Length: 176
Image 1 (cartoon, helix red, strand yellow):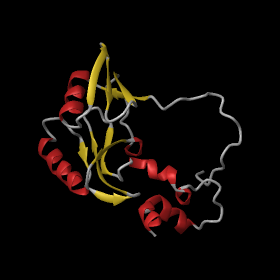
Image 2 (spheres, rainbow, N blue to C red):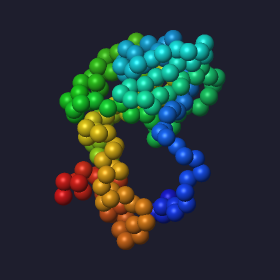
Image 3 (cartoon, rainbow, N blue to C red):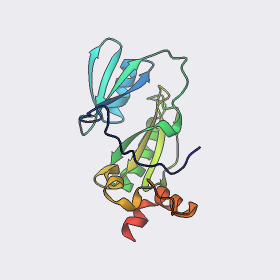
Image 4 (cartoon, rainbow, N blue to C red):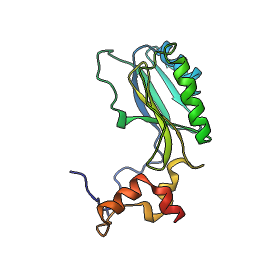
C-alpha cells in the first residue's frame, strides 16, 4: 500500500557512481532506430546485431534489445521522458506527431495536459513503449531534489490534499 516512506540510516552496500543505463524492448531495431533518430532526435549507435544504444543530452543510455514481439506493452506509467524547450514546442511536437503517426507506426497519442509540474503528452511507439514529450524547468526534475518542501520523506504531518498538491502542482509550492 502506498504511503510516506522513511529515509534509511544505513550506509549503501554499493558505492554507486551514477545511474548509467536502462533497457527497452523493441520489435525491429532498424525501424526503432529510424523512429529514435527521425522522430525523437536521439543519438543512436549499434554495437550488437540485436540491439542499439540510445541517449540524449548526457551519459545515461538505454540499451534497446530486439525481443519477442508477443510481449506485453509497456504500461503508460512506466514511460520515458523527452524534454523540449517550451509549452509551444510541446504543442508543435503534438501536431507534427499526429501528421506522421502512420508513417512511423505510432500506436497512440494523448492530448497535451498540465500535470505534476509538467506540460506534456504521451506517445506509444511501434514497440509499445511509451514516451512523454514534455516541457520541464531548465534542469528537468532536478528541482524535486533541491527543495525540501517537495520531499514527502517522513512527512506524517501533511494532509492528503497537501500531499496531492506537492505531487501534482509542485511549481505552485516553489513559487508560493
